[in-house]
Length: 146
Image (cartoon, rainbow, N blue to C red; front, side, top):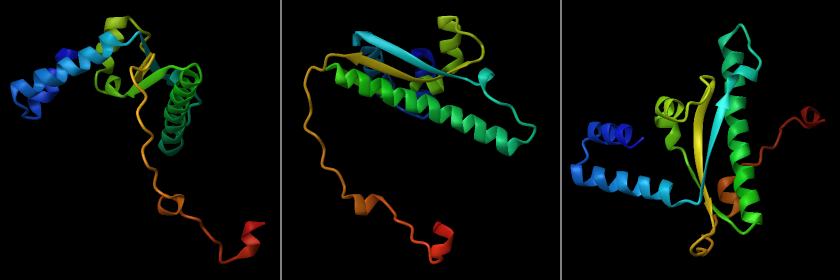
């Protein structure tokens, strides 16, 4: 993964010092975690459709399912007093991960989770009021709401 990361950061025009600092941070996160979990998507069990629109919707449902599973994983870890970090770096190096871990071809690495006991528990960030981030739709035709 580090080789792929270095190549991509070089293409982005980062200095060698910044590249090495980011690679070190990434390696440290992976190697210092007591547990690393890789979540993968597998379309081989999903429905197939003859048209592109429904096939794209099926893929989106699979991606959403993987994300929902990741959220449940983090919630379960939290209940057990564990901390977790969700990173999506596997999306950028799927082939490298498949080859390195000898995973089935149909698996698509989506996310990696680092799980362990937290060194510290940060203060909760202030949240925006719900009114700022939600939209409540009102129908101008009450009959449609039935």
